Image (cartoon, rainbow, N blue to C red; front, side, top):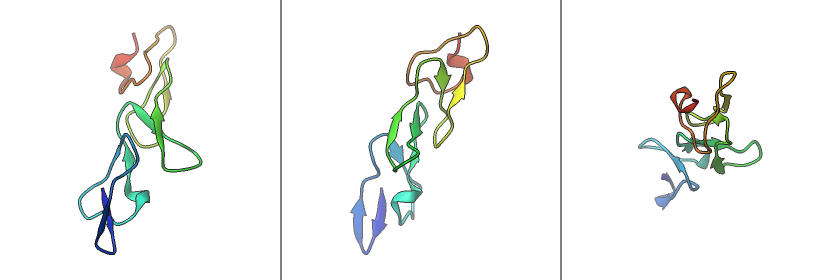
Length: 77
């Protein structure tokens, strides 16, 4: 959630912001999701990748795979 001119506005789905945030750009994607290149929307992390939040979108190590929405390298098996 962020506040502008005394109005509270929810961050987009699967995003959150720190207390005191005052802009949609303060919203950060939660782990398991990744921020779109074109807007502030967060999308599920693709299979065989892991997303630690924000814009992080990392390929699993060689010979491992992961499900969609994976949050860490530990999800690559």
